[in-house]
Image (cartoon, rainbow, N blue to C red; front, side, top):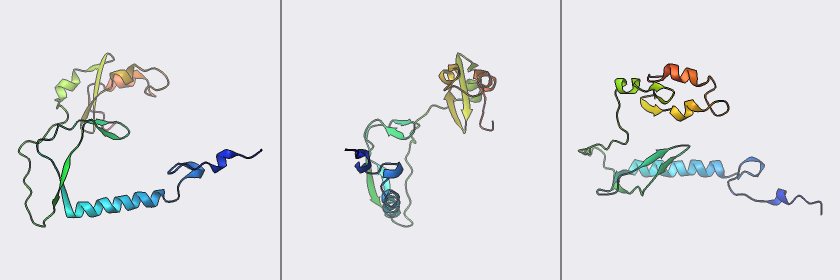
Length: 147
C-alpha cells in the first residue's frame, strides 16, 4: 500500500532515471572489438549472393540477408576491384531533375542525391515544411545543397 511499484521496475538499456550504467561502456567495447576485427580481416561479399536492397530511414534496413566472408588481411596485398560495381540508385541529369518543378511533381538535388519531395510539399501545416510549399516549389528541380 502506498508503494510506487514503478520505482522497482528494471528495464535493461533503458533511458532516463533507469538507464543502465554499463550502456556506454558496452557501446565502446563493441566499437573496439569491431575495429580490431577490421584491422585483421577484409569483409568481402560472397559471390553469387542475392542482390542487396537497402532502405534508408532512421537506420539502414537490409531487405534480404547480407552475406559476407572474412578474408585475412595481408599487408601489401593488392585487392582486386570488382569488375562491375553495383549501382543502388538510378542516376539523373540536371536536365531530367529540372523537369520536376511543380507541386504535383517536385524533385530536388541535395548533397548529390535526387529526392522526390512531392508528398512532403503537399503537406500543409504541422508536419510540412516550415516555409510552406511555395518555397519548395520555388527551388524545385534544382540543387538545394547550399540553401
